[in-house]
Image 1 (cartoon, rainbow, N blue to C red):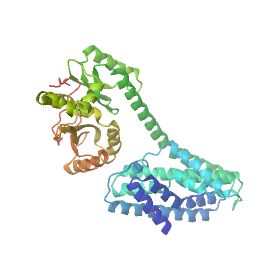
Image 2: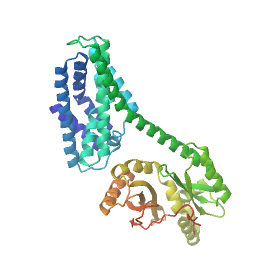
Image 3: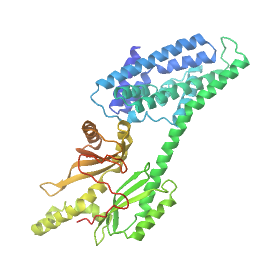
Image 4: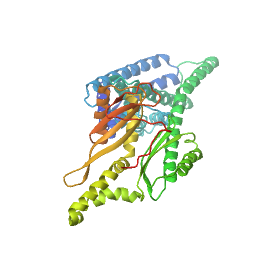
Amino acid sequence: MCIMILAMFIASIGLNMNSTAVIIGAMLISPLMGGIMNIAYGIAVYDMAHVRHAFMKLGFQVVFCVLVSTVYFMLSPITAPSNELLARTSPTIWDVLIAVFGGLAGIIGITREEKVSNVIPGVAIATALMPPLCTAGYGIARHSWKFFGGAMYLFFINCFFIGMAAVVVLKIMHVTSKREISDKVLRKQKFYVSLVIIITILPSFFLAWQMINNSAVNSQFGSFISSQFDFDETQVVSKSLDAKNGIIRVAVVGKRLDSSTQEAIQAALSEYSHLKGMKLYLTQTEFTGGISKEEVESLINTEIAAGEELQLDYEEKNKALSDKVDLYWPAYAQFSFNSSLKEQLMSELPLFYPQIRDLDCAALGSLDEEKKVQVDKYLLILQVDAPLDAEQVAKIEEWSSRIIDGDVLASWRLLPGVSDNSVSGNSVSENSPEEMPDSNGE
């Protein structure tokens, strides 16, 4: 019991601190694998007394582990979910396969005459029994039933399929049974086992399909942007995809795209199976002479850095530079914002605030005393279908600041069609596709 408590605390700390090495250490210490193998052995030899004893012991361990991890996460000052925690909330069919192969490897390693010392540790690491229980405790501590449900489902998958794989191997080895079972009872057992297997793996198939579909949508979205917005004098500075509502938002800067080009781009969506039927929102910032991608990037990184050259004609050069910064900086800041950060925010925030459907983000910058551009803070505009209160917005700002590694100012706006038009934070407006104006950058 002491070993299990220590393993639980180690796993909880590792998940809380997002430390893979610490989590692996907890997996190696955890004694849960023995209980599963005991249950499998009892089922294989039809020793129901042994099964009941092993099951009660495993059940006590599970409940105790969840309670201990709940207490830890209630006391922990770090409340933001780590990537390691999030990874245990959406099990797929691949987790089923890992459990099956892990169970096969585990029972074969145990039953071989020549003991292979690294088999059981390897199975413990691959199947990861302890981390899902810690994640379930985190879900209880933070009142997030998505965390609790997803983690317990993963734990059940691991236990059930490890046990079933072990039973199959023991049956193949013709382990001596405690008593004889009639064919009628055997058929009945096989039916119920098959039923449980089907019920268990169906959600994992759905989650796997969801993951594959999201990956395909994002892949086609990237291909669409790169192929349809490949212009010499017009550059994409911001793009976002709202697959649920079928909306693609793209902001460009440079030479204006005429209506025929816009219609052709919209029509090109039908060529992508996962983007077909989506609506394109295009925002343009026009510069008559056009602008290249290299100019957008080098304007900030090169011209401002070349302070010595600007000293040749300080007054005129400084004014020209300030004008250019005023024109180009908002677009460049959006362009340079790491899109992977936005994806990470959108993958994690809705777990705690389901009303968040999408978000827009941008860097807010200014010139320091040396006339160099610096990022003061980041602006998050959350698109929600239900209002957020001030405390929730403050928590989102605190958590996002840690992810982005910078000050964050968050505000929210209701999606079109929601009756309440309240806005929290900075004033934000939303236009319909027909009313969406094009800014001229002035």
